[in-house]
Length: 131
Image (tube, helix red, strand yellow):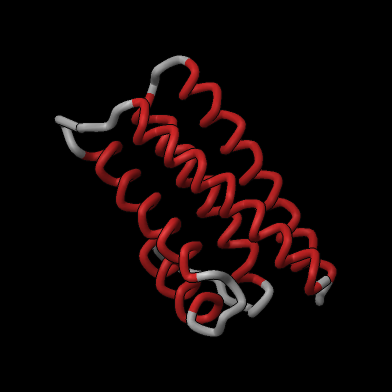
């Protein structure tokens, strides 16, 4: 793998970890909508790192979800649940960020952080395996 791509992948992983850390702080402060948003962005950046291993650089959030599903879930490189986690997190983030009346509660936010944590762990495991 090209050194420039490796550096970029590492930067995305660091950004992912940072977003997950902030999501935890927001959850503790009962800021559930923003906790979900940060949890999604943790998974988003981890997925972007993984996509770069195949030379893929999505232009949109939906494109990222679609490419991850096509190149990593359907091929068996990642468990199906990781594709579902990414989709759930994206949908919950959009609802939290754009809906005026959101039904996000502590349980939903905790679940989002759990999914984001697992997604990041699976991404790191995959990246370590292929490096």
